[in-house]
Amino acid sequence: MMKKITGILILLAIMLAGCRNNNSGNTSEAIFPEEEKRNSTLDYVQEYEALSSILQQFEEPAQVFRVTSTEHSQVIGRQGTVINLNPDYLETVDGEPVTGEITVVLKEQTNQRELVLGNTQTVSNGQLIVSGGAYYIGMAADGKELRIKKGKSLDMEFPKVTEDEMELFYGQRDSLGQMNWQVAQQKFVKKKHKEEDFIAETDVFMVVLETIEGIDTIKNFSQKEFEKQQKRRKMEKETREVEEKLYEAIKINQLGWINCDRFYRIPPDCKTDLIIAMDNKLIDVPVAKAFLVFKNINSVLSYNYFAHEDDNHFNNIHFNNIPVGEDVKLIIYTAEKGKVYIHSSDFTLKKDETLTIALKESNDKELENMLMLH
Image (cartoon, rainbow, N blue to C red; front, side, top):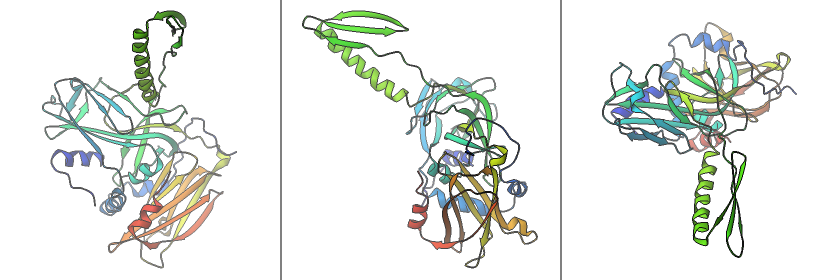
């Protein structure tokens, strides 16, 4: 059961409200055009919020930090995200100065389990993208939501979970909670470090060969000085090991959802559509959530299903323009009269395939096991 939060945390919680070709690219073809039609209305908002809350019981709680508004601060998340916070660059959403204590809320989603539990699909304007980590950063002070001032930015460092070249994206959710990412035309840069010193011991003195910017320098040290240098090297090594897991600081000009991503280009002859037909013999399924989890890339698609009496075409789940040959896991779940019903299957995407699935009654343990993704 999720813990209740009050006051300023409630405000911040609302704010949360062969054929494989990995080159960057762009396309206007939607992955689920049928769903986009439905999401233009406010139908079923409460139903989908209730479905999302079922997964949230397994989600890691958001990290909450409190810092002063009178001086610079640094916030470091559990997975290494670094937020360099300059209060002078912040204001309330009403354009007022920031006063009092600043509350920072941070979510770090670096793997598929976290993306699914957070309902954070990896799609940019209908095109599949591969995530190097999705992050939510929200701030408030004196009960008011904060934003970054126009023309200003905050320096942030994000975990480097892949060696692929990644870009910055900003995310927005629609009325039903579906995420869409917009590319910001900024690339993430790997940190650069100077070469390590080479230290050798002799009978008389210690010799250090230090290389800085391509220039080699030999230094002789006493035993005492040598021990000091060894301690310094150890600290530098530990710092470097931490920093190597992060990108260079990147300038962020808006708070909210931020993603480290790359486009997944699919050659035209390798695109396919996947249709999932619901066999509802066990229960009537008015609404359901579906996730398509890719096993070889850090990508997740989600789909909001609902039964539509007037149009049978809407009674199926549609994923369009997705890559043939990728291994995936399909997860579908719904709730009815206090009970949860699920489906899970693993398969390889084939050309123009239609699958018929049935939901079965589940318990918390089985649901949690289904969500044990890498």
